[in-house]
Length: 240
Image 1 (cartoon, rainbow, N blue to C red):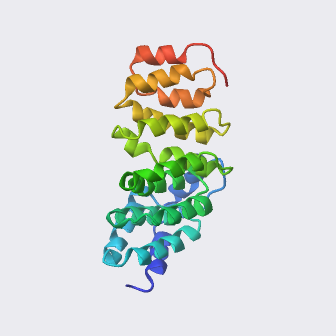
Image 2 (cartoon, rainbow, N blue to C red):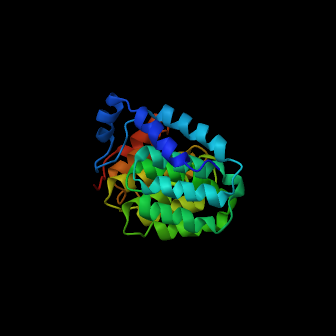
């Protein structure tokens, strides 16, 4: 494997800074973020290009490179790490959960890092090893807001396919009264994706929990429903 691949990636990112992207990146986050300021489409191309050099390597070696990228705290490097982790999904084994958990707990510090890693890599892991969905319920009880968000957004793509409906509701129960708006948006988004295959069940869940569910989560959950159902969901009895 090319020994200086991380250095080369960092050099290319540094040379690809778009000043407009750099100056606007902080607008999307409440917290301080560390970004080069490279357009997402270009970061995606960089990730793909360099993965071609390492795809024949052992998964363990690739995960070590991902760890190094995550450790830098740069959003673009985290994106590349998450993309590489997803690219080796066919080689996932059960002990990889500990690696994913380590990354979420230690390196995820904004919604973009959370979603990029969890939507694809961690979500694919759960699809391959469904018993580990139980671990997401533990995440939902974490003191770390990003771990709690991760418990929901990991199921975005499985829920979109109509899977794990029972667990979607169980995780929503655990997060129901969460005061963090980014956690609320996370589980609301999960419910919205589940509603694409299970509209009736999700609408019934929302109506049954409407008095406790924050407005932000509810609005996300019913966003793709027909207008008449959205109107019923939005009417009175709000509890902020």
